[in-house]
Image (cartoon, rainbow, N blue to C red; front, side):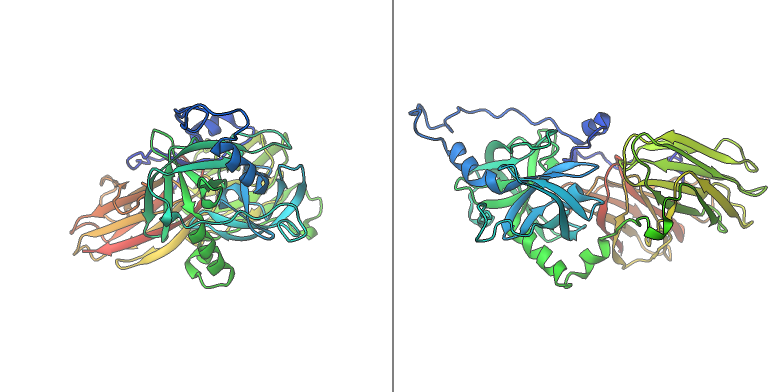
Length: 485
């Protein structure tokens, strides 16, 4: 379905992933929340002190910072924390879509290609492997973990990471706050620790620690208009990742999607010709391509007579670089733009008309096109289903087909920790002017990241269920439930 069609949003929720998108300041403004300045004296509220006596914040920083590394990828920056020998904990969205990343430690050590070991695309968690770091022969020790359940509400906590960092060899920053609340996300079986410690993009994957410098959480979300930070319980996060690594978490494995990459046999080919089968009305196909910064990108689709198609070209950040639908049913569609970032771009080509006539459309591009299969698109749903799905890339829209008897009320719920869900239902039978049903903010997700739509009894039997990120800039897994009642 075209993104220019009416797409009614769910109730806005003031929560967004905190990530820093280099080179795209307008997107950074969408993703970053302005954190409130923290009150309090520089002596941690303990009154006058001797210049020789370090504050609690100074002691915590000295203990924690050596184990907190800067994460640098072609698309974003973030933070990772050494939690065991050769293992660093971070957020999955910091790494997407890389299989290795650059790490910089506060002592100046640089790891140019640290391997991404395991990812949890449902809970936005990941482990990075760094051989030799944190072993008995190394000068950096992993951070000890503490049980967050033992920490009372109101206890002082600290965030250590690399917020809004742009240097190649930076030092971590520290902010201070209190443990404000615990929020348990039932679908993901994960508790989040809420704090008023200041947070900004780049802090994702950072360490939330107690007053002794022990790690209690991994930061990744901004909650509410006041800019609260939410950090996933570190002990529980590592337990989930261990289950994924052992193959015991089938749901999380089902949510993890990787983008296709160019194969060696493609060589230095700079042009690609594909034939796209758009036999079904409103059918779509997607491709990934990898231009370098500053390169010109050109795409052309030549449908047969009587078939109306559109082209969309999306940046790695979900920006709509090109939207082409100017020639009508018989025309050639063309798109041109200059890549403002290196990395995976997405081409979407689809039919606009509902004509039953088949279409095999040739597509010529200036870059090799790699077919992007989306197992969620076209998937059929029925009352009683509970599935795991995923937005493959920023700007992705998943489209399911829901079939009901119409005899019962049906509730559709999207539940996630990765994005602000935008849910929309459209009837596929009967009156074309029938109203669409948008999702609304639903109960049951302590993070505020759920959307729910209700089909009253007596509704049409076939519905299109469309799910996207409200801001179009995030990707990751989600739970989708269909309940009859």
